[in-house]
Image 1 (cartoon, rainbow, N blue to C red):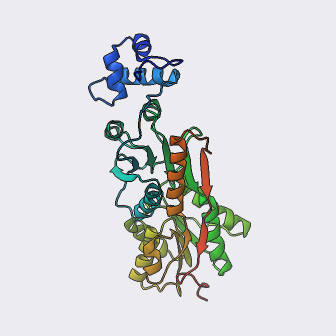
Image 2 (tube, one colour):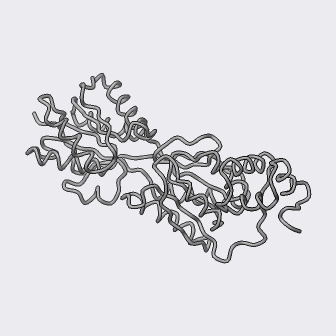
Image 3 (cartoon, rainbow, N blue to C red):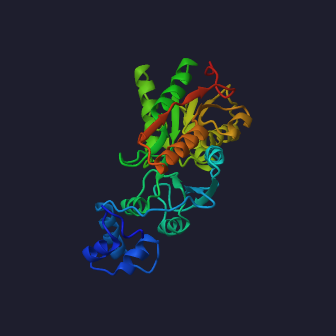
Length: 338
C-alpha cells in the first residue's frame, strides 16, 4: 500500500484538491523540494498538519542519524552537548550529524530543506524557538524534535530540556554575599535571551532578600563571550565606587572580567571576587580557578536525546524537563578587601 493511500487517513490527493494544487506539488513539499513557492508550501503544510497526515516509513534507515543543529558550533559549550548526544546515540547504534544554521533564536531556512532530505531519526535544536512552519514540516514527515534550551523559554507544544537559570543566579549571588560582599556587579547575557533575564532575576532576588541595594551602573548586558565581559568589566572597575565582586553570566565573560581586573592592576580574589556560569572545562584551568555555577550541559543533551528517541518510538513523554544547577566553589572568590 502506498503512503498516500492509508485507510482512515487523508490522502495526498485530498490534500492536493483542498490546496488547489497537483499531487506532484504536495509530493514536492513532503520531500523538501525547493521548487515550490513559499505561500504554496505553507498552505500545503497547514493542510497536512490539520488532517493529521504523517508519512509512514517502512523500515529504519540503514544508517540512522540524530541531527544536532547549532547557531554557534564553535561555542565552548557545544562539545559538552555533542558528547551527551553521542553517548545516547551510541547506545542505540545511531550516528550524530552536526549542522550550523541561523541565529541564536532559530535555525535558517536552508536547514529545513536539508533535514527533510536526510530524514534523520530526529532533530535536537540548540535554539530558544522553532518557527511554526518548521514544526509543521517536521511533524508532517514524522521527524520528532527536541530543543536543548539553555537560552530560552520554548512554547508549550515544543519538547525541550533546560536548566534552572534563576536558581543558578540566586546561588552565585548568595555565595558572594556570604563571603561578605555588599557592592556586587553583574554582567549577564543579551537582553533578548530568557536565560540572561532569569539569571539577572536570581541576582536581584538574592540582593533584595539580603537587604542590599544594587548600585546604578552595576548591571550590564554582555554577549556571553570573553571580549564582552572584558569591556563591560573595565567600565565597572573604573568607577570610583567599583564593585568588590562581579557575577558573570558565563564562564567566558568571567574570564574577560579576570583579564580586565588584571589590566587595571587588581588581584583576584584579593581585590575582586568573580563568579562565572556554565562550568565548562576552561573554568577549572583559569588563573585563579573559577568559582562558577555548574550547568549540566552534557546531561541536558543526554536527556534531550533520550526524549527524542521516546518520541520516535511513539511513546508519551513530558514536554518540558528542567535540570538543577549547582555552585562549584574554587579560587576566584574570597572575602572583600578591608
